[in-house]
Length: 238
Image (tube, rainbow, N blue to C red; front, side):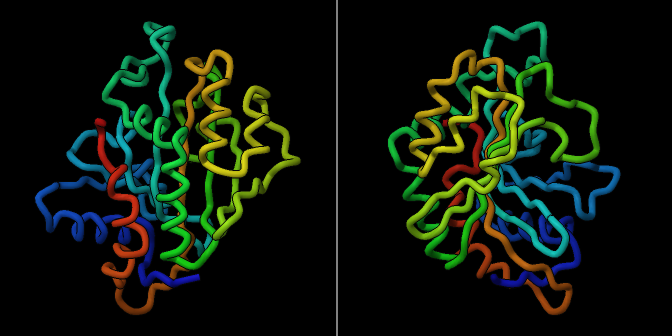
């Protein structure tokens, strides 16, 4: 596992943002918990809007001395919930989820994330969190408390394996996802879930790195191994 030289997630996210801003696009880095930003989950997205909802974005999530860096995509609610949830949470044609799911169904995501594995020569973490609209927490300081269910996978060079197969989940409609062995299978299964428009889905594919606060961050190495592989999906509209 490679090591990143940085003190905390906030420092790392802002260094990455400055690196990305050298081109024609302008990016914004934002924490999930602005009251304790140093090691909160952070996102980087084009433009200045709040990075939740429609955007594909780079995400940084720390767990002790490991930080996962990768891509975060969200699926919002359907129009059936208009007037019940915030209008910002209702999907329209601008949400990147639509294009992302279509690519997943065609098997294109398996190629993209396969490249991520090859560039890093390490197991990649895949997290799918989800919850029906009335189970989603809105007021919490911990990102991992927002959605009540999560299925995790390890993506190796030629294998795709669920890690928490025996852990019960509340939303039984998603139980079948534990049998998936590829992104294409995941999206095929998701597309067949009954009343899918009532569920929020949060997908994060992250490359793990160790954190060390000695030395300088090799931002060009991080760009080559992660950022450039995923940049196609860091946008808001298809």
